[in-house]
Image (cartoon, rainbow, N blue to C red):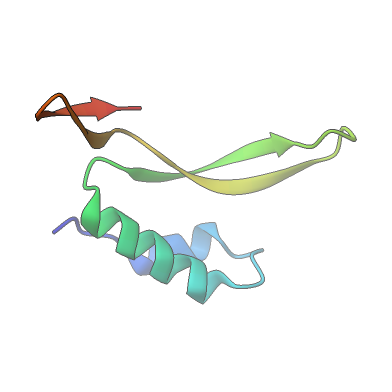
Length: 72
């Protein structure tokens, strides 16, 4: 099982309204897909405004032709 530092996640998500829910969801996903890592990055909206948002980066295994492939 991948180790997730919930305290560090909460600190990264300090401006999120539902940070406890977000931490639980991230922890659940990372426990299933161990190559994913949470990162904060600026997202620019169509109107030009931007906001720091959490995303997960890494690979996810996908079944393909009877085998597993790692996809970005």
